[in-house]
Image 1 (cartoon, rainbow, N blue to C red):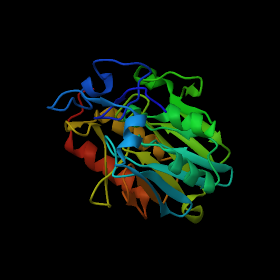
Image 2 (image 1 turned 30 degrees about the horizontal axis):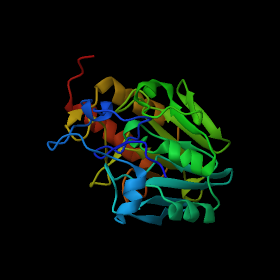
Image 3 (image 1 turned 120 degrees about the vertical axis):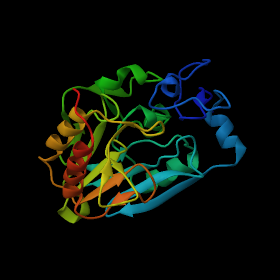
Length: 270
C-alpha cells in the first residue's frame, strides 16, 4: 500500500514526509486557513470515502476520476486515439478498482499532464500501467516525487503519438501545456486544455489566468502568444479540467475571440 505523503489541499504526492507543500505555498495555489494537512493513498483507500468514477465525456474521450473528487478535484481524460489510449492530466485518487476499469477500456500507452496542480499521484498511475509520464521541463522544479517514469521534454511541441500533439502555451505555468487531437470529434478536432485554457460557465468564451483561486490574471504577452500558437490548429471541442466542462462546438473561434476580449481589457506593461 502506498504511504508516500499527499497534500490534502492540492493532491501532490511527495517522495518523503515534509512540513510544507511548495505547490500550495506558491501564489497560484494557497495553504488552507486550517493549515497544511497530509494523507496518503493507503489512508484514502481505507477510508471508504472514495469510489471510481469513469464516464464518457465526448466521442472517444472518457473521464476518469473519483466520487467525490479529492483535493482540487479535477478529472483525467482517457483519449481513445487510433494510436492507443492516452491519459491526459491526472486525478489524485487511484485504487485497484479504478485500474481495473481503465484496463477494461484497453489500458493506456502514456500520460501527459497540463501543469503541476495536476501532477498529484502521477507516479502511482505510471507504475500501475507501466507507462511514461510526459512533462514539460519548464515545470521541472514542481515535481514532488521524482521517478524514472517521468520524461521531460522541451520546446513548443511534442508528438507523443502520430495523432496526438502536446503544445506548450506557457499559460498559468511556464510549462503549461495542452493536448491537440486532430481526429477527435469525428475528425473536427479536440483540444484538451486542463485549465491552461479554462472552460468557463459561458461556453462562448474561455479564460486565461495566472492564478485561478487568487484571481491573478495572466500576463498579456503570454495570452497573445498562446492565441498565436493555437491559430495553427483546428479543433471543434475544448475539454477542460472538470466533469462536463466542455466547449462542444466552434472551439477554435472561442479561443481566438476570448484572447481578443482579454487583450482588450488589460494594459500591456511587458
